[in-house]
Length: 221
Image 1: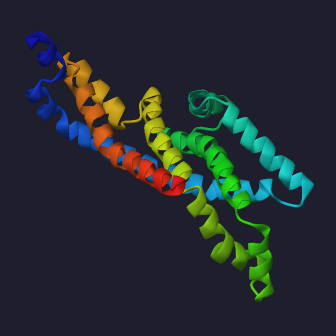
Image 2 (image 1 turned 135 degrees about the vertical axis):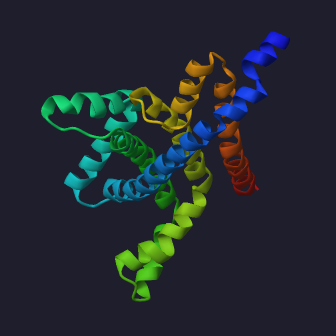
Image 3 (image 1 turned 90 degrees about the vertical axis):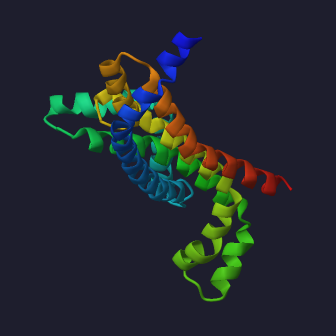
């Protein structure tokens, strides 16, 4: 038992590793901010394209959604970071992660948005436009707020997955939380930094998980 505690819950090693963990957490938060914001915006445009009356735009949006939902995000990340340089395109680790996860997550956000937009009755569009609102104003002020409210648990759930997905950035040696934990483990020959990283992820994500459950219960009621 003492050996287990010393190897996984060594407080001294956790304390020594904390500055490195905080540096990794800061990088993780920057990644999450960029990927989530761009994913939400990109997903909305893909969803609107998916519902467009223009067939060519609809097919492009559908192909985009299917392609990047089918590709494993790790494969996409390694291709962008390690494959594109063979074509003369060199990308920093941070940019590679943002681009790869943007392509992946915007396709999932797009499907969530599409479900929300479909859930809004067509009469809402017609009633809003009959008051003189343009299609863009109708979408922004009438339809989109209702659509987001209807699928808010799914948007939050997908956001939780985005945060967890950023741990894959350690594969290309980006100094985010998991990568720094691995570095601390290799220096200390102790698994306590990995446990500390897991605890940080738990503190970061548990409120979001509870928030998702709260909204799911509200919608069910």
